Length: 351
Picture 1 (cartoon, one colour):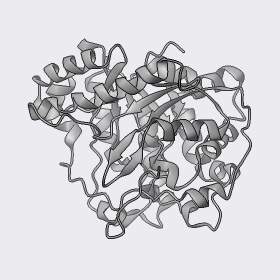
Picture 2: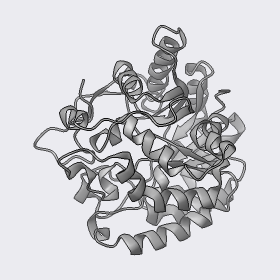
Picture 3: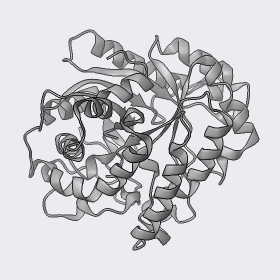
Picture 4: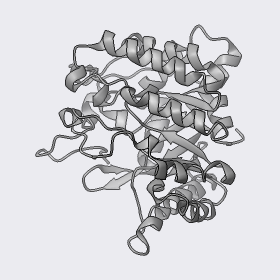
């Protein structure tokens, strides 16, 4: 099955997956015994986004040759309930992911514990009443539901990379959203944040206001490389890195190291005749990854695949090789944190 394949008439926010192109470059897994928790992937079955389900993820994991022991499912507006109160419909995604987790936990689908942790979506604009939705998700998750992601990424130029979702600017500063956010910590839930780099200050403000709520910044904080930021990588990096250090001062915040294969980062590896090697990716990403690790420390940083979204740029196996190259200067304890320890602790996986 082919994932993330947009219709030809659409400008998609995500790069099309080209299996033949990906197959033209293969690598043997580096350090194949190193234990890995993949803390960020999606499962998808939507006409506009393509299909990527358990067999597809397992094929990527097996083909990559790396020691993936568990994964965390991240919301993708998938499998919502078809009826009932609108605010409760996202509970269907938790039911779906938990069903996949149960299949994987049976042992009949190989070693990895797929969807061992589940992150869903709940509308924080509901304010305090979102608590009912969260409580229903806890039940639906069968002990695997860990928290929500409430996407707040928005930029005036985002149409340049095909992002069409319109969200209010300053969403994380909204009083109603914060009223809903306040329901997370009492229920023992965490928050995944996906924002672009100009919004990192909003997340700093949120993290300071709710120091008891565990927060995980997705995709190194979304340093935009397209639209009005195209050709200004050094300028963007300076702004982004300053904000990252400010955010890292909040001890309740963690960071995911990945997502850099997305179109919005502005890297052009997908335009090559051959897919990028892990050496190429490590060279491109090193400034971002090393800045995050230095700021947060390995005990608050975790590598993430962001598959299948990043599959338009490289294969699963090559991605993890790039991460291992980026971690070459780390000692055994630091490497254990970056590849499985931090993710396991943050999402309470017990691996």
